[in-house]
View (cartoon, rainbow, N blue to C red):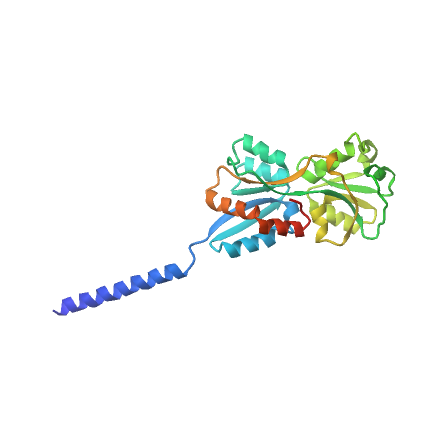
Amino acid sequence: MKHIFILCISIVFLTGCALFEEEQLFEQPAEQNKILVAADSSLKDVLPKLITQFEKEHPTIAVEVNFASSGQLAGNIQQGAPIDLLLSANKEWTDTLKKEGLILNGSQKKFAHNQLVLISHTDKELSIEDLGDVKQAPFKELVLGDPVNVTAGDYAQKAFQSNEVNIWDTIKNKTVYVKDIADIMEKVRENTQTLGVVYASNTVQNEDVNVIYEIDEHLHPSIVYETGITSYSTNHHDAKVLTDFINSKKATETFAAYGFGE
């Protein structure tokens, strides 16, 4: 009889523990899933805000972001880097990755666009009414992103080389190439004789440079931002959830506040 009593007490105790663990299971969020995002460096200002909003709405999904130029990120994906989602500023790169089977079918979605602007030091006042006026402008150095990897640099050079402007041969000897937009901003802030070409969105939250000219979009390919989920990602589901959020009305409003267009 004593053994039966102890057995009953043990069953009640174990049942109670099981119920307690089950209650805890429902009270606690599931183990976090992590999404590894490769984002163009021009998204450095806006993306942290969007990620914060996303993680509040999806507490079981953690997002880790690596910023670099679209070309560098595409190269990383070609080498099999552990990336779930690409946020590219260059449609040509996402198209290339798609052709190579590295981007999941149907995951290329446009979420924003941008514009190139010519900037100077805050103490440098220039009157530029046409991009061709740069030919006569008093400056010592024009800083561009490396055109091989940095979309802004590639498209800026194309604008200067266009038939309508056609001043590249005159100014190319003054041109200095850097690895990303942050380097351009830093060089322009440090030197009154330096000009640079960056995205309009880079200047919205940075009042320490002057925007002296907005470069006409028809002078270069459109700056279109696209998502792309890698085909080898092990977390397609959560990457799709983040893709949908980035394309939501709420995200579009945040992009607009940071100088991006739809």
